[in-house]
Length: 392
Ligand code: GLA
Image (tube, rainbow, N blue to C red; front, side, top):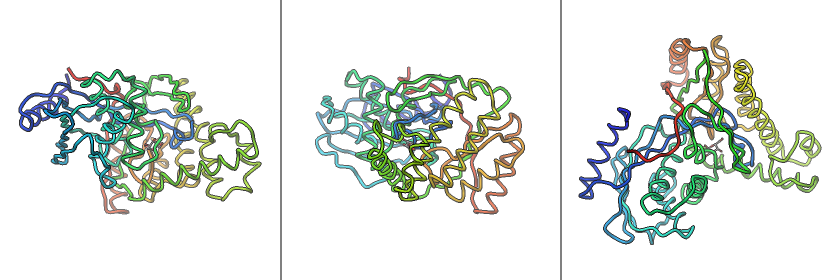
């Protein structure tokens, strides 16, 4: 067992015993994720290429002494929250409690029998970084409750229920990528997921002389969630117009560039740009996957550059800090490509760099970013890891 695991487990066990008077019955770890390519394609029934990583949330879970009274403790926020399974209205947006309560509510809604439970959690998935700490919290909770109450759920079902918790309790109409990656990740592999059929294939991420570097902008813009939901509506608006012209379209996944060109005059400009982005982003996933299989790192880097450009000008989900970081990296001779990762409006950039050049890139960008925005960037080292599991 890794040192990090042990450190967290000791803290969780101590707090669990201190609060509830006995040790937990179930210990779970749930990873955050990176996404190599394919942003916002998931809720358009498209393709994504994420991987679970070794930044994790750890959970200690046990039954409570009561049929419905439950308690969650966040060690990182140093907060305790008591609630009843019969009364689980969502708290204001942004409350961490929503992710746990949301999962419990979705399980009950799905006909599963739950009893009161106690849950303590802590972890090191940076929040607001685009690494899906919220999915890790949902999926770890779901997996833990599945174990504790013997619910017999498949991982796919757990991903779907966790996604619904995010919709109904966090208010973000997200796709399934984050939850699927957190539950289905495999060490050393990226996951090519067809978000319509949920069929998936694992691709080894062996970068041979190159490395993936995450740089956290340390900004999270407050409009991220509302803009996310607006993007989803705009895609739907595009689909409705396209459906009037062509048969067999249920989502942007089904639309070709030629079809879009034929209806472009009937679409608001913003909607046309969003549709073009999604069609091409799906193609970029395929190109990136091909490049990965052929170890063609130049092509992989080129795809990242194009994706950054498209997220900035077509999907319009970047922000000045991210654009600055990506531009800086994309001009650096040891960087093959860099782009923003995740839902948008802050978080991390993903940089494909020549191995050994990381320090030079980081120190140069650190100074430039500090001068421009008065803020630090934080490098995040990630290892591609397994999906949610029991500990011990
Ligand atoms: C967030 C959502 C995902 C996905 C990404 C963008 O992480 O939770 O479903 O849409 O943004 O690719």
